[in-house]
Image (tube, rainbow, N blue to C red; front, side, top):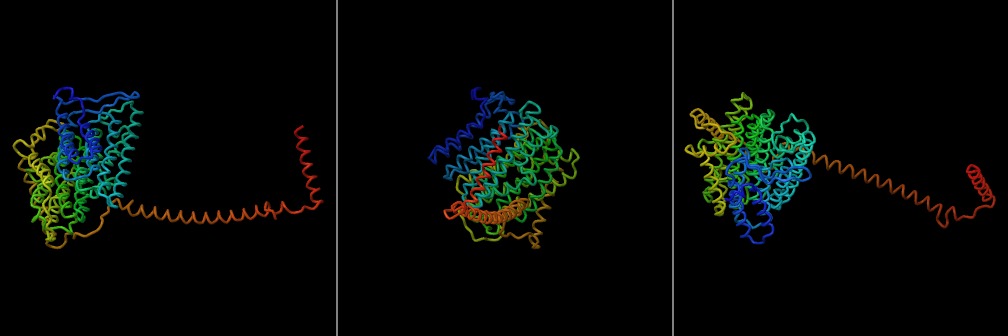
Length: 575
């Protein structure tokens, strides 16, 4: 490709396709754009002959904007975002919805633009576009639950952008620079504002509920798209701006553990995947906090592999929802009989996220575990180890077991549409390729930020991982056979969002009722005062009132004398 294209951000290809999808009434044109745009974006991505490219730089109001920075850190994130956009385009070929087609392209393009942003204001612009465009993938589901979830989603993500912008402005005032590089928390208020703004999108503890609230309420294809971009964009931003901040080690470790308990009892399998996503983000956040070259490679590799296998799992559950009409574990089972290909692909995704050797999750997670242990973070390492077993339980076993096996639900839905199977097949092949001992994982490691000679396939590492997986599987079997495993029940599982969805909502309702009552009393009092005032005014000014009555001449003379005296006194003082 000519060198002139080497400085054009691939994000523009996706965003332009989003605009054209919005304007085009033709289903076939839109689907062609959704496939072609990621291909064009990929060609623009590989156009530079070397990394370290900077483009789209311009100055406005004394501020320098940089819309394209391709370096060793942004490279793996940019590449996997383009792959995800391509897979999403294939998976959604059957869908006839102009709004979601356009929103998905804008969303993917803006996420890609954020990864390539070289300054904080450019980052902010794309950051907010991701929030505004992605919410339509939730609202398009058309249910009352999706509308409410979308409103909550939009509110929390706009808040994230506000904090990011506030931090950027404070940073500019303190340093005179808006460059998006390492920021750290030592800079004070600016660092903390940006850190929390990014933390919202990374689903930090207590800031995470938008994820479990919104993704299960998105459309079948929308959930797949949502799983790829927002949170990994935040991981990239943390790696760019806050690598080595020790607080992230503990935040990440906590993120890996707490979703395990909620995922075990959750009945909605897409919500189980949302909790699982939160758990996987914890590994990446922890790696960024460790901050060594190996750890940053681990975060980038985990993000790359995770986007693909998590999309594969959401694709599998999306296919089940599309054909069976539900993803409730209590209503499924036995689907392997009529959906065999979806079953196989979902199992590959489940084994990948569980870090089975020879699948992508293994070669990615290995670096994070090793880096955490090498830096002496023993307690966080033990937490990650426990969380690894938990991932196998809720994503590796629970998802495929309850959807495709378990009891026979008597449902016999048709196999997933062909385009869905193609997308799942490509994702499955990538899960295998990225971990292949003879070339696959070496390719993945070659595109990571740091050049290291790491080998995940050592005997002790493989053996340890198999022991962990076997123990977790045995625990699941024993709990199921003994009847101690939590039964699948209808209901909504709330964790920290209970604070605002139950307690907060109750407080608002109580305040509304109290204010209504106070308003009623105030209104009643005002009406009484108004009636009294009207009565008094009528007593004075009514034709039969005081001013219309006959006044005795003596009284009139007295009042005339008083008024004359007042007039004389005023005139005297004025003189």
